[in-house]
Image (cartoon, rainbow, N blue to C red; front, side):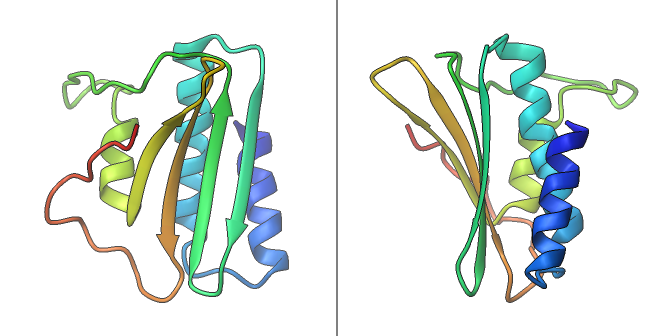
Length: 125
């Protein structure tokens, strides 16, 4: 998780993309943590791409297990990954392949700060 956070920090700073750096670090950390804790995947692939106005983060693994919301109480340290995606990402979803692998992705606008969505985004399958 730390390597993914450090890599996204380095990449964004090198490209001058500082507007959403804290959001990107938190979200990439959450996505990688989810794979490590819930999927027991042998491989994890992290990709960051940018267009002039959007940063796209994706984490792929070789598990067919889709992300699922789980209830958490205020004093729990876990269970908020998808909530954070809803809160910080401008859009997010899940893509699957025929090979029982998946990619969880999110987009961050680089032209304006993220506003909480009016309703949670649908998961794309």
